[in-house]
Length: 116
Image 1 (cartoon, rainbow, N blue to C red):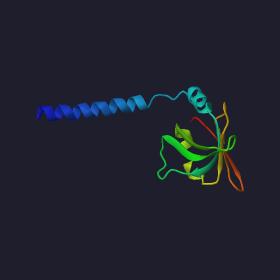
Image 2: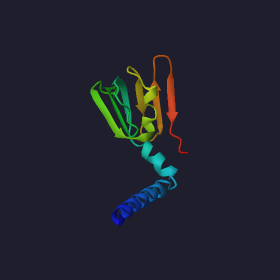
Image 3: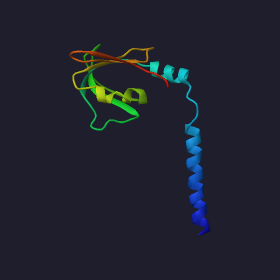
Image 4: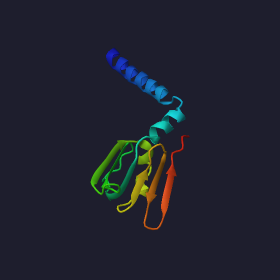
């Protein structure tokens, strides 16, 4: 009985510590700098079956070299826009920018990272 109560208390304390740590203030400058890194310019050929909330995964062709490519990056910001991307769209992110551009047949979406 004592061992069971201790185990339950240990789990509760662990959950409380995790919740306090995850409530730390976000450093927007650092986060923006992270999302500004990297670039791609891809015509989307295949979307993942299940869209991850953490890992941005797209198969397509790079416009620069016309080669098949897989873009696979842990990036929560980009994952927010899976619902906006369709097969045939061109997605672009330029180095030193935190803007995702989605080129559709009839429009262009420019989605800027906003640290809230």
